[in-house]
Length: 153
Image (tube, rainbow, N blue to C red; front, side, top):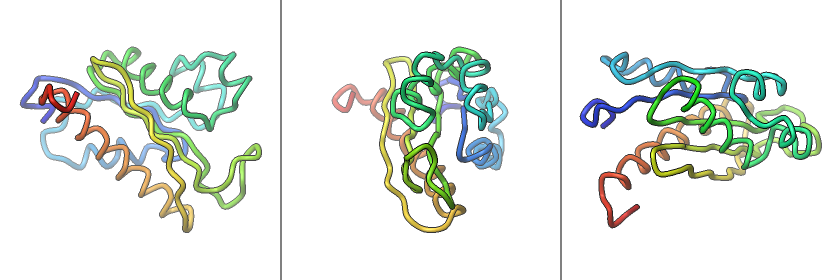
């Protein structure tokens, strides 16, 4: 869909650690649309590389819906992409800063704004991470379709 539209994509990832980007680049010809990605596992990198406001990180921590939105917006801007996707959350095995294992926020930012979704996933770390990738990429497809179809936007 991105190729047909002449649009581009970038990713900002925390708990998925580059798995979104790795999944995207498995698609033949994706170099025409995938600008790149940021793996911002450490909280300070969410600010310095992806542009998440430090005040937001200080107030709410890295596992937050507004942080996911800021990551998607930030990677979109910093990589010069039409679309940005982002993941942040707790893959486990232990809770993080009072947030339970499986609490994940994913976001898609595009020309008309951003969408964020909260996930409550179960299972081992690998499953939390792979389900997160599936959900955020499905959100991207839904967002692309919504922009193509004014009735869905």
